[in-house]
Image 1 (cartoon, rainbow, N blue to C red):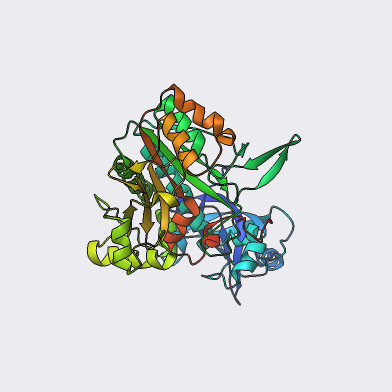
Image 2 (cartoon, helix red, strand yellow; image 1 turned 90 degrees about the vertical axis):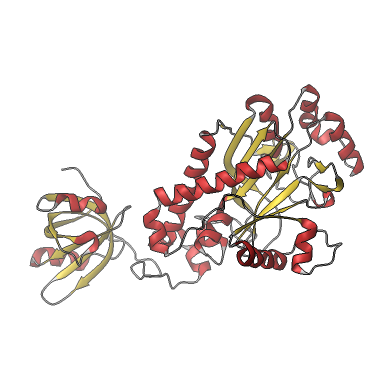
Length: 428
């Protein structure tokens, strides 16, 4: 008899079926007992009246893996409107040691550090697994949207010979006796692959050795990177980003509707045109000094409130960041060279995406590096490619965990990360 999942039970009313999963909860009443079995799809309610089966049930513990063969009956008050009767219950392993928190409760009462210490079991809780399902659906929507626009998925090295952004925040390692680093981003490689495919994307880990101990930073996170060629300027990149976000949210709605319902969240609407303000205007809106070089988290929150009040939008582009705060490969604004053709996208008052137009001429790279007093040699292999013809191009990167945290309303990005890596945590 083939095993079926809990969500398939309504199609089998009146038939004998086999399910399997974890003991989610037992309720041992005087005349009847209930066994709630959890599988990947949801919960099944098993009604036990036979004394021998009840004796087996009494020996089980929560999280023990079991197999149940029973008859499906309609019951509007049970999960999915059905329940299983006349069961045979067979453990598929030894009785489980219960975790240090109750997974059957609506919310996990354990502190976040305790949950992270026991992540393999804490992630079984419906609210924790729901966030991961939303994450997976968002990635599926990301890929589907870009595939439909003739982007090619690439896979680039995560061990590199030089840093991408700066040398101060990289993880160094020994590569057969030579110095190497964990990649901070696929930035150089995705630009070079524009010279091959014109439009590329990547889903992969990136590593930042920044000693942040905040609710929004991780030392390893998943970056959704996009790069496209033959752009007029950064606005073409922003248009692709807008379509990508809409596709990601559509993917979540299509693929993870049950997870969205479990968390009780409402998916935001991506405006047909996301409102945008120049960096100088953003400073004026938040009342910051005109010479402020960057936006602080408090500024981002204020801009998020402004976008909701003025445009009824959860999203806001801030364009034209000062060149001094952007990487050397950023293209300056031709009309205002001290500002960039770069942008950040704020989502509910927090920076979610950084992107912009890149330099594409070899001489401009030499000049940009010289202006910053940086040598060419560490990035020579990257810069040299621009001698051989590269189109005007640009791109962006979305932090997946931060996106899911903002989407679900999680207070800490670690709540939506399966096994987070940060300043303090290398296990489990």
